[in-house]
Length: 297
Image 1 (cartoon, rainbow, N blue to C red):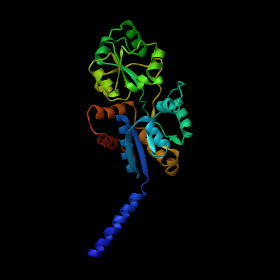
Image 2: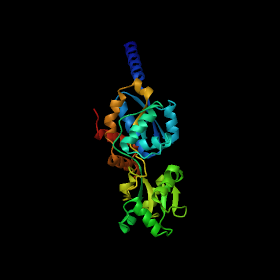
Image 3: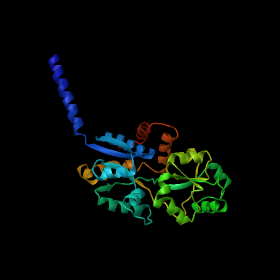
Image 4: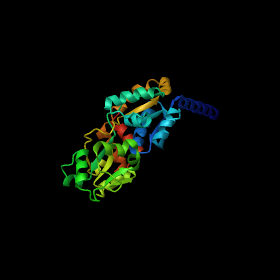
């Protein structure tokens, strides 16, 4: 009897190992900010229910993540149209959302990368005012209004906080200043980590600051987004991007990811990001709860 039990145990163990080995491995990358961590975590948990062995590599810089995918070290990334358009393909033409998606889909296909069905959110840049400043200056509703306010009063306390990357990119601060004819100099700008910009806004240490339109801290800190009335900032619609070689091997993946992408809009991403950045929940717990609330057949 003991021998029979041992044989059965070995058979079950081997069957389990064989079943696990049959699961296709998919390597998912995530850049080093909350939204990317959440998207990768939600996607990995979802794909595991579809029979994939999903593995996440997080904390990646933009260029490193892109290089890893192009070289075949990563299979899937959630990418933003504006990042691919400007940073990877060096296109400075002003395009709307649909045009941006079509262009990056065409350009990245030549590099062996396929853009799948996009989400319904765009995490683009914006300038925002702290609640107190917004209440004191109801006339400031767009960036042109801010430009006028900065020109009318150049006192030192009218500071603008910018994250360091944006401040030093040619398609960042320099282009915005030129288009809007803004009086932004070293004297009235402060460069800092992106997260510290929100802290400075919440604490009333600056007059305005550069933010991201799906950040959860916008609502939590009562920040007022200013309209980009001259349309400087590119569209940053997010979509899963897969290596074509991997998609050829697993063509069903495109259909499997479409209903997931459809779940994400601006409001949803702000809520998810806030649960991590404001409420300090773990990304894995937020992802699991989100998928429980939004079951996909």
